[in-house]
Length: 301
Image 1 (cartoon, rainbow, N blue to C red):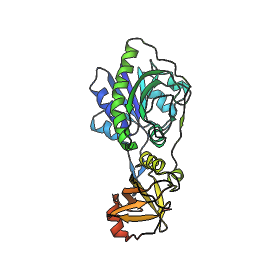
Image 2 (image 1 turned 30 degrees about the horizontal axis):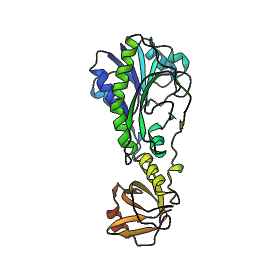
Image 3 (image 1 turned 90 degrees about the vertical axis):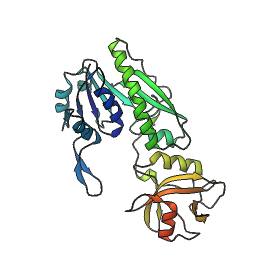
């Protein structure tokens, strides 16, 4: 089949690599226009556009939906992976076999923009990927393939995205084979549906009155973008990794034990592993303790 992939983030790369070497024809990729990025705000292409350049695959960056429609009208399948644009019905109906989406959850759980982060934040023990046919709804279309993935209790969203990106190749492979074989997708149930709303920086501020387990889930969910953060001496500080401690402290209070930075929560304390001070690079908590000259009794928040 002649396939076009509409994608922006790096999680699309494993599927792109497979398609490039498969029996299918990867006709082109579509990605978001170049945008300012990084501290210097230099205009930069997406990870997918860089991949296309390195692999000599034609890459388009449409400025509007009319341009997108012209690009996809002659393909067999349009596959979207974190593209970041809602496509209207008139575009969904253009490819011969419609439009597929590789989604990083077990639908109908976690429909929306941040399924991986919301799964970890909620303490889910199981995640996975779903390939479904796009319709007018938000991740509501009929399902071609699902693949499950059990979550370790310490997994971060960055780590889970890497795992699911690889797992997604199998789901895409099965889905394209199903289309080739003339099989129809299964209607998606709405029972148990949850919404994975976009993450805001405000909600990533850590409330140290919450339990250690809930804070740990939020830190792992929001790492590394936008990152769980707290306030210290008037500045913001990203908390990149934590581990549970048996001791307890007043919420937000800092204590140094055996060269470890311990902070109190609404339950037992947490040890801070890595953090990122404002305007600086990620570092071990011990290095930060020495540089900032932390003393017992100071506090976060």
